[in-house]
Length: 478
Image 1: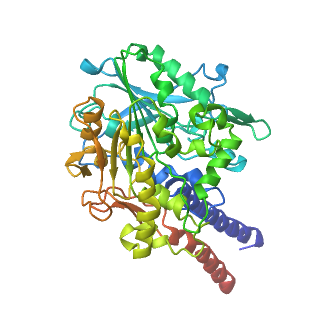
Image 2: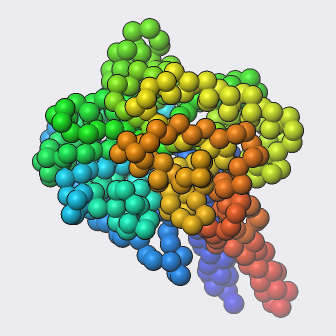
Image 3: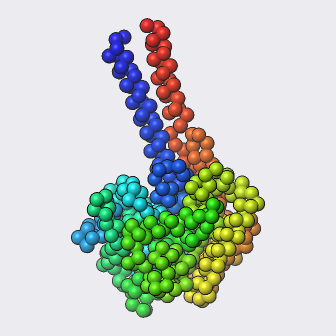
C-alpha cells in the first residue's frame, strides 16, 4: 500500500470520527439541550426540549390512540406588516376546526420555549424552530388541552383549537431589530398579526374564548390576556390560562439572581418595555414588569394559574444552574427530587414554594380567578395527556387538572386548589432525569412515560481507537 492509499485510509477514519461525533452533538443539542448545562449557548435558550416539547413528551405509545396531527399554516402576508420570526421568515400556527356545540368557541395555545437575551443566543435561536419557520414541524400532534377526543379533553375537545408557534424569543412582546446581526425582534407584531388572521378565520364570531400558554407561552398568556379580552364584544366569555408561567424573581443557590439577569437582557435587547402593562411600568422597572408575580394581580380578565410549586424548569435553570452551583452540589437533586437532602428541600420550601404562594395571594382574592398549584416537580401540565387528563393524572381536591380548569371556565364551581407541601402528594408526575454515557431518559415518578436514546456515545468515541489500531497494524505488517 503506498502513501496515497494510506492517506485515504486515514482520511476515511477522520471522516467517520467527525461524522460520528457530529451526530452525537447534534443529538445532544436536539434532545437534551435543557441538560447540556455547560454549552456556550445559554441553557435557557434551550429550555424547552425536555420540559415543554409537547410533540415529543406527549407522543402516544404504540398501544395508545395516536394523537391528531395538525398542519402548519404560515401567515404569508405577515412580513408586509413587519411581523416576522427572528430570521425574517413568516410566523405560523396550527388550527383544528371546532364542531357541533364548539363551532363558535376558540382556544388559543401560545407555544413556549424559553427566551434569548443576547445577540449570540438569538443568532443561535434563529437556526432553530424557535426562531425560524423554516425549521418548524409541518405537523404537530394535538394532545392534552388541544386533544380532539372527549375522553382526553372533556370540555374543549370540539372547540376551534389553535397552536400559535413561538419564534421571537421574548414571549410575543419584543419590538426592535438588530441589522448587523440580521435579527428581527417582532413578537408583539406577530401576536397582533396572528390575532387578525384568526379573527378573519372565524374567531370574530366566538361566543367563548380561552387564551392559554405553557412556560414562556404561559408568561405570554399573562402579558396578553387583557389585549385578548379587548378583541371581543362584552357578550363573549373570555378567560386566560397560564400553565407553568409563574416565573419567580427568585434568589438562586449562590445568592444571585440568575433569572432576573436573563430577563434584563431580554427586555433591553428586544425593547420589551414598549409593550409591558402601564399599570406596572408606572411604578416598577421594566425587568420587574416581565415577572408575572408583579402582573397577575392587575390583570382584569379572569385568569387561571396552573403551576407546580417546585417547577422543574426553574429548579434546573433559575435556582441551581451551573453558574450558581459550579461544584455540582445540586446535580443529583435536580436530576431526581428523591435525591435532595434536607437543606435542599428546606431551600425549595422556604425560598421557592412560599414565594410562589405569596406571589398569588392577591391574585387569588378575586372570585373570578382560579388556581391549581400542586406540590410536584413538573413543568407544563396542560399539553401532555398524562398530566392533563388520564387515569392516573395528578389530582387536587380529587379533581384532575382538565376538570378543574373546565369547572372554573364554565363557572361550575370555584377552584382555588393549593397543595400541601412536598412530599404529601402521591399523584404527581414528577420529572426525573436519568443519564448514562450512552442515553438520556426522562421518566415520571409513577411510571416511565418517555425514553429518548441517542447515538451510542461510547461507540463513537471508540472509532478513533479502532482507526488508530488499524493504522498501527498496517505499519506493523508492512
